[in-house]
Image (cartoon, rainbow, N blue to C red):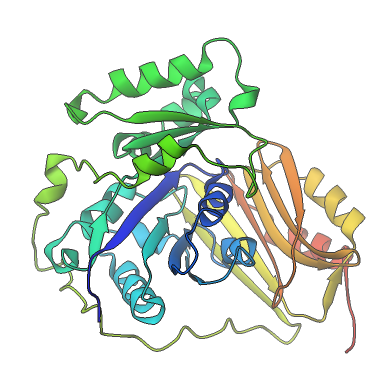
Length: 351
């Protein structure tokens, strides 16, 4: 039985800004004895962030919803996912990470509706942003980039050790002047170094700010009701567990997605595939795309790969149930060519 509303933070930000890394830092602050739940949504269809977050500690429940559907207007997949997660984990805190190409206002709106009033206590919404992107029209001219900043109670400027001159000041000026409709709702700004990791302590001021009540824009309180708006799903109405992805005769699953001017393709390879670590690095470096995420079983162990703006990071992971790779691009992808390259850098081993 739920005795009190669950403190809930929405963690938003554009592609590759460091949301998953920040959540790992938050998990490191979890008080002993508490259970935290994380709902992760990805634009891609195969789901990788759950594997990157796994191993973050005990009493942590992770639920993934792939395909960018958390932020759709109807939000039924989100309601089902939240209700499943709450019923299963009975968490002391809930963290929600929408896709970097999702509409966070829809998420905040749903969480603010009456049927979650006694279930969820909506706390500060966090937007992670690379201040260097404000001067790039591809970002500042994108509706999702701006919506993420508009709904934020906390703006966390990431990769701050790479900033030059007035780039952080330009970010604060941009937020304060670009969204006059926020009125008295002002964002609190923090800096986070690119070198930060799960072992890096977050400031006490930032952690305290996370527990402030969300300052919701007025229009969030009055959602328009129509025949197309789904009825609320009871928090105790549980859907059957998600079906595992169906692999083809090769032991591979391929899925596509597109939206907001971006295209994605993702692959899942069963446990029989082993990737050549060095050849994977060369393959990734050869691609001119917006984002790459992968968790792969390699000849040097299980590795997590993350690429944004040509910057690659690789981490060692403890375990995985399969190998997964997702590519996101501003242009359509040559799927057959990419798939052939993936097979060229892997081999199928027998057990």
